[in-house]
Image 1 (tube, rainbow, N blue to C red):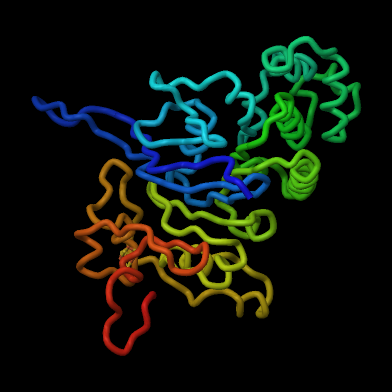
Image 2: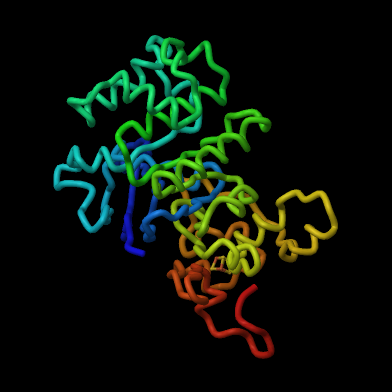
Length: 334
Ligand code: SF4
C-alpha cells in the first residue's frame, strides 16, 4: 500500500504570552513537538491522548487551519503547505474534517441544504446541486426532506451525520475524525461508528481517528499512536499494541480501562500507577516529558529526551527503557 500522508518532524508552537519585565520573553506552548508518522491509503490510524496532548492540533494542522511552525506534511508525495503557509485548493478538497461537536460546527442560521451546498459550490462546480445534495443525504441514510430542516431541528446524532455528509461533499480521500462520537449519547455512538466504517469501505476513505477512547480504537483502528505532551510516545498495529504495550504511559492508560469481567481483566497489562502530576504545557520538564509521572524513571530520563526506536515489526516506542542497556539480570522494558 502507498502512503497517503507522510508527516516528518512536524512542530506547531503557540506563543501564549510574555514572561516578566523587562525581558518579556515569549511563553511558548509546544502543542506538537516533532512528530513523524505515515498513513497508508485506506487505513484507519487512531491518534490517542489525554486533553492537551496535541492530538487536535495535529488534526487542525493537517486540514490547514494552522500553518505548521516547522516540519513537513506530504499528501501523496506533494507538500501540503506552500512557503507562505497556505495550501493549494486542490489539496483542500482531498482532506476533510469532522469536528467533535456538531452543535457548534453547523451554522444554526443555514438549512441543511445550504450547509451541504457550500462545499459543493466551491469544489464540485457545474453539477446539478440538488441531485448532489439528495445523493449526499442518501449515502448517510437520511431522507431527502431533511435538506429543508435547520440544525436545531435535528438530534445530536443526526447533526453529526450531516457533518459527515458535508465532509464527503468534496469527495475527499483522507478524513480527520476529531472525537466524532464523544459528544453523542451512547445509544447513537455505535450507529455513527457503523456508518463511518461503511462509508470507509464504500469510498475507500483513509481515517485519522482522534480520540481519548482506547476501547473504541481496538475495534476501528488498524494502527494506534499514543501522544503525550506534543510527542508520539508509541505507535503500533492495533493487535500488537493491545497485547504488548511497551511505553509506561501506554501501559498506564491500558491498565486503567474499566472492564466488567475477570476474563477481560486478565488481558489487561499489569497495573502501572502514575506517580505524579501532568506538567504544565508551558513548563515541560527537560529530558523525557513523562518523568513526573513515570514509575520507572531513571537519571538519564531527566537529562536526555529519548528518541523513537523500533521495538518490533511496525512497533515503535520512545523511552530510555528500550535504548539503554538493561540492568544485569533484567530484560529490557518496564
Ligand atoms: Fe519513563 Fe524514562 Fe521511559 Fe520516560 S524515558 S517513559 S521517564 S522510563
